[in-house]
Every structure is written in structure tokens, then in C-alpha cells.
Image (cartoon, rainbow, N blue to C red; front, side):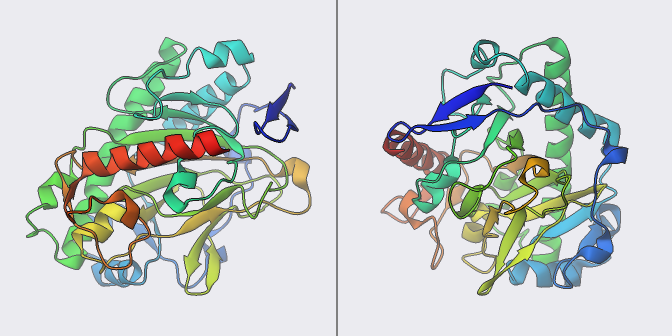
Amino acid sequence: MTTLTINKQKATAITEPDFGILDFSQLNWSSEASLSAQISIFDLQELRAGKGLDTLKSALENNLPFYIKNFGIPESEIETVFNVTRHFFNQPKKEKEKMSHPELPLILRGYSAYGAGAYENSLNGGKAINQYTKYAWGPIKNVAPNTAFYNAYVKMQHKLSDVSDQVLDCIGEALDLKSHDQWQNLFQGEDTVLHCQCYYPEKPLGKSRMVTHADASSVTLLTQLPSENGHVGLNVESGEDYIGIPAIRGTIVIMVGETMNSLSNGRIKPVMHAVTGPTENIETSERSSMPFFANPRDAFKMKQPPQSTHSKFYNTDNETTFRQYSNNIAAAYARTEKAV
């Protein structure tokens, strides 16, 4: 293990954990029975055949996430991405820093150390430190430490992009959105982004390990692994309360982002979510996740919906392309990083 110092104004020492290789069959998965009654799990192939669309519509209109299973990606391939990434995170600092992309924050690619790359801070105006290290990947301009790493990420990027298209198609059917003049611009975005990130086993430095925020994407596909101690890190807002979203083997969590909020003119609001940390059994609270942000095409035209939490990222003329919107977020991110 090595010790890092974070926070430019206030020295805070943290110890980097050893990210061991994982065997999914040995992890402390939650059961479907442990889910809140408000949260649904759908078989993706059944959704595509039209079964369960009314239930899906209800989940979306109530600003709730949902799970999918039977999505067509072998568990072994998902396990490989987590394990090549965890192996990389165990490398010496100098080796990891070689994979820090020179174009951050304009594009999200490559390695980000603990406490860096906190885009969520710019989305909600906070200054919290995200308590994880991550690797980011996209359709182009990637960096990779070796061929095995490159191949695993390319395959996963392609397959999750295909799954996100299927999910969007089901959402379009459930909500009757396919006649919208921007519907086709939701697909095949130039800058869809895949992250693999590991949360450190420590108490939250603030209220949470990741601050409450809504994603910019049309939909986010989140593959999450459980903490050894059973703590449920992912929590979503529901009215005045939060609902825990546990890691269930063989599933992906789907959360609608701001792009869908814009497309639906506020009918489908983005899922507000955060990652909490435990207050006991800290040493067994390490958590890994792999979000895939299905972003629309750069030319997608966004109009600010009512009561948007992202209102400051829209242009003042009330029509913004997704590329302009993303650049506004990147600029806010850069300012936030300087302030931390």
C-alpha cells in the first residue's frame, strides 16, 4: 500500500488499498427479494417484445431507476474489465500517471487518481472529493496500458453501446417518444463514455462518497459490485427520502439523465443519485462500479426543461446542442477543480 496526500488547501493523508482480483462467484451479492417494492427488474428481451412497457413507463414517470437482466453480455467479459482495471490501479503511481489523458477535462479518458475528475461536483456546484479512482474510455482518443486492457475495454464499450440502444428503444416505445424530431439523435453519440471505478474503504469525507447529482446522459447503464460488508452504496432520491439500490448479480441498473429530461420537456426527470459510505466495518467497504454514459450525438438539440438542476449549462437563447452543453459542464468542472 502507498499513502497519498489530497486537497491542496488542507493536507489529508489516505492509504491506497490493494485492489485484488475478483471472482464474481465469491462476492456478497444482494438478492432480488432485497429490493424496494418501488424498484423493478426487467428482462430486456421481454421488454423488447413489448412485455412490461406499462411498468417501465410508471418507473420513468416517477423518476426511478430500474434494473435489466438477460442483456446479452457474458459475465466473464464484465469480470475481465473489472480485473484488468483493478490490476492497473495496483501499479506504481508513475506508471498510472502515464495513462492520464492530456485533454482532460474536455474529454473524459484515461486514468484519474483518487479525488480527481469529480465531474459530479460541477453538476451540483459542490466541492466534495470523490473517494474513488477511475479509468475512462470512449469511442476515440483512448489510452491503454497494454493490449489486454485495450481489447477488454473496446469490446465492453461496443457491447454496452448496443445494450443502451436497446434500452432507449424500449423507453421510446413505453413513452411514445419516437416521433420526436430529435429522437434519432439519441443514438450513436460521438462521445459515449465508459468508466470503471473503485471506491476506497474509508468513511465519507463529507455526507457521501459521491455527491448527489443527475447525469448528463440520455441513459446511464451501471454495473455495480457489492461491498464485502454488505453496505449498499448507491442511493437514489424518491421524494424526501432515498432508496438503496443494491448490487444484484447478472443485472445492470438504468438511470435516466438530463438529455431525456430535455427531450421529454420535463416529463421524465433525471434520476438524482449519490454514493454513500458506511459508518462501521470500514475496512470491508471497498466498492467497484462500471457506469456507461449513453450520450446523444453532438448535434442533438436541447431545450431547457422546467426546474432542471442543469439549467446553468444551457445557453441563454434556450436552445443548446449537446456538444455546447457538454463543453459548459467541462468548463464548470475545470473551475471546480481549481477551487478544491
